[in-house]
Length: 314
Image (cartoon, rainbow, N blue to C red):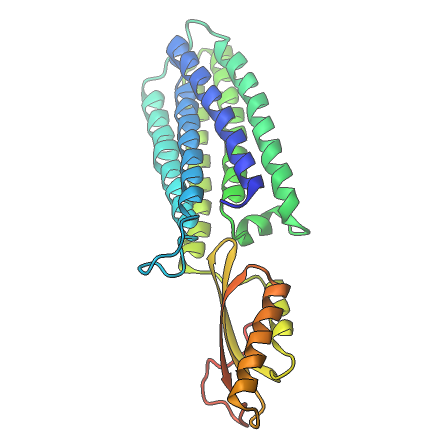
């Protein structure tokens, strides 16, 4: 994975979650709080997810092979999708099951009563540090996009995944603190079940958002509009009068495929056309460095274009 910021955010989240998971589980063993158990599993799932992101980033760096001529860049998206599945099943569904069980068998916290509160407050502090790191690293690449647009349009999956996981972790800790505190104050274990159910619903929603975004990247997304405009401007030049139609496709977060049919003067020789294509490729790579795979087809623009796809990509 070439994104140093993404790796830094993942390592920070992994370090925080491993420590938090152990602490929460010890608190669960002492108190038998369902919120603490749900949060323990949540942190454990998050830790596994961060390992998956690191593995996906490493495997995506493999060189292209005859069987995979465009390389393995999209493997990062595959692991991002697996993360959403783990978050949904191990995190969300388990928490909902535990909430259902606790609701029908409510019991208060009879021993080590304030241990969960201390653990949750400490966990909020550690998780806040991880979230702050993810925000800092994301701001370095987010530009002027809103956070919603950043999550929806980012081509590298690691930072959006960590951002959503850390946000869900912080909200989950707040829900757990709410349920545990009310259970301690009222002696009614159903408040613990309510906090656990809120954690489950939150994780299911976050997992669904991640799955939708990763699915879009797996199917193949075009370059963003700004990159498309730069490519269009770079293609037109000496020997290339216009673009007849163009398609772009992300082969990975840092690798873009550009395929275009370009209009060349009808009087040009084959050598002139080849020279014009070479020059156009150089201009495109200078304008958009991640445009590493470029296929240009020369043609002569006619008065009417019969191909309904022959439109410039918006």
